[in-house]
View (cartoon, one colour):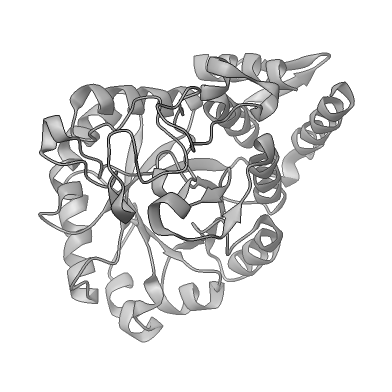
Length: 352
């Protein structure tokens, strides 16, 4: 175990010691405001996919520490935004399914909670029914009026570059629009500002260097997506998996993103429980048999393991922003570092 920790520590030292050639990377995390509970919303929204019987039998291979919660509960929103802010992540990217959708209705409360924690909010424009180029243009106008400047378009290849170009050419800074694609040439010809990958199964860390090199050649921002794993069998029946390997999968993807000189490291995800990509705390003692937990992640067990991926995220965010300096036996926040950087320094020291 000591040898393994030493190897990981030396890897991080190499990343930190790469010098000016590696610029700081900002960070963003994908967030889902679509959950509902019987008590608050009249139904267990998203928890009952694939014939599940929430609250104890839910559409996830993991069980949330908060239980089958409602994303409309102000206490939940406050706690979640506080957790995200504590990791040092710069931006929360909320799933958004069109005007009038549940996600749209919950956006004002989310914006207020995020602002109180110093978090920027971006919109993940999903492939909602009836989505067109024109509707996306109206979406951006609507969301800009709420203070949102960054937009991540999922499944942009529903339309051709020629269809995207007239809309995107009209948008000026500070608006940035990212395309979910592994083809930088598609994004450039359409007029997007950058690319992101989201899918941690299709876009493994092995593709990040090629993607970012191609994006940078075309003057695009590169925002590859890292995640702890993937498992969706209880929610969708999908038997494909990306094992977490006690945190090694997450670390490997982070290293790949930073070595690729990512401009933004995007994280899949804070709370996509149905696909098992979440880093939100999971119960160490689920209410029924058959659930997984984070036990063993980074050598942590029991209640301590519930927050293992949040702690590790704080460490990697600090590394990506170059807010930490190595010292014998661990890390220390730079003199100008924030309180969150100091917390991350302690977190990094505790796990390496």
